[in-house]
Length: 454
Image (tube, rainbow, N blue to C red):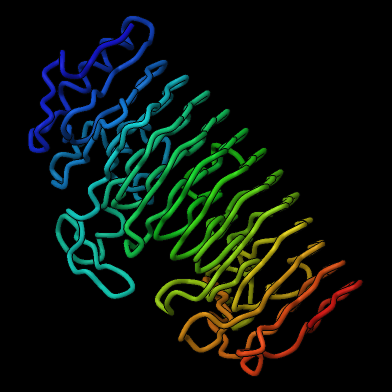
């Protein structure tokens, strides 16, 4: 079964809110057991929020444009996240708006060579040199939570995103929470690189995820794997494959963690290219969860510091473990507990790196990181930005930024780190800006075999 949104009254004038005809088409197809809702080429279909239903394929023809409304009032309470989840997810923590939303939308898909435009321009209050200030519905810092995601699916199984382009998201472009068996192939996410929190795809407590043959240019992490506190009923992040993708980011290409109350495990990242990014691949355990069994292999990574206003400082490979918040102290002033993350068994293999920053392994104490391997790393060290060197460990409750020269490898407070068959090439024009080949402190079991420099 196929229904065009035009047959339900949609108008491609870029002004009319087409949420009702789009929803009518989706409802009709879903009522008949599934099928295709067609967004045809020719003009721009503006819309407020609408809900994707099970077994419905939202298909955008080549040249079709689905444009998110820039009016906060078009993101109706009917489609807000707390309603969709029947209160199962903490609505205080999650945003209250999304353009395309779905709850238990099993077997749904978004396909085609058309474009979904998140209309970020409409949510920018002030354009900055390195980061924009965004507009909320009532002003103030509400901007960061109130902006709409472009696509948000919760507890949905067997979902596909194929070939579609998402441009100018106002917040995170795509968020999956508690989903299983996700197939993302051949998509593009192209953001304004100055939009804060402009993630590409966020995988929150999902299992069996495949992201392949895709292109990302985003203003925050292109892909972020996380296990948020508000969604604990959905378990861990498990079985994720990311292959043959291109990344460019004002922040990080791929980040595992930061928001990591639960565990993240069994991840393979392979055959990817990272260019012109503020960070490359980052493993950041923070909120009590463990990040483990990760292989990152056969990649090319080029990073540089973009601005001190963004987390990071040009690291291509980054592994850290801290508590996000300050330690909790008892009445006697002694530390009672921290919410420290842990890292176990992370491997970086066969990676060509061009960077201006240290390859970094750093924890609050050695028990937090155990078993990080670097093998066949070809690392070129060359300063590419105007910013003074620093080690950026944000977020954590101990220290955020350390001003110091970069070394090729910094291994601090980590256990059983191995560096094998790797080479560092110093650019002679900037060599005096850097420190040593490797600097290590309080890192039992450090094993270095055939690490050379020239």
